[in-house]
Image (cartoon, rainbow, N blue to C red; front, side, top):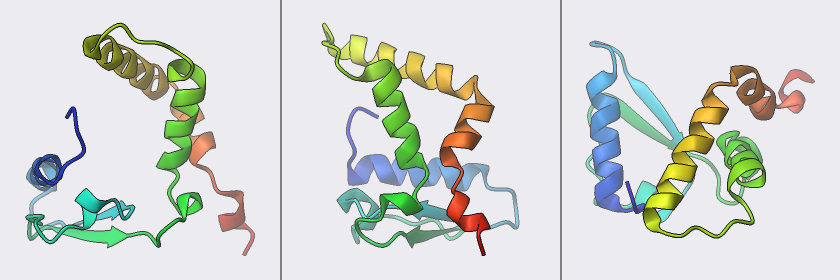
Length: 115
């Protein structure tokens, strides 16, 4: 999706709901972005939204993945076009998913194992 909107989020939720196994229920952890929390969302019956507390990126490991992608493949660049941005973002994402060990290490929270 080119923009983060309520419409895009509704399409995202519908796609998640479509692939949830029959009889299963998905819990979707998300931040409190406006398009995540609007009352205009159509939340499928097999999904529950679980918002994180405001201003708590340390609870959301995907924030560290975005930071890693920006620092390593997307930051400090000038893109010639919107298509170039999409191409670079897709390339960066594909590089990352080819490294599952890196995803695990970036998302690891040592403090969760201290108790």
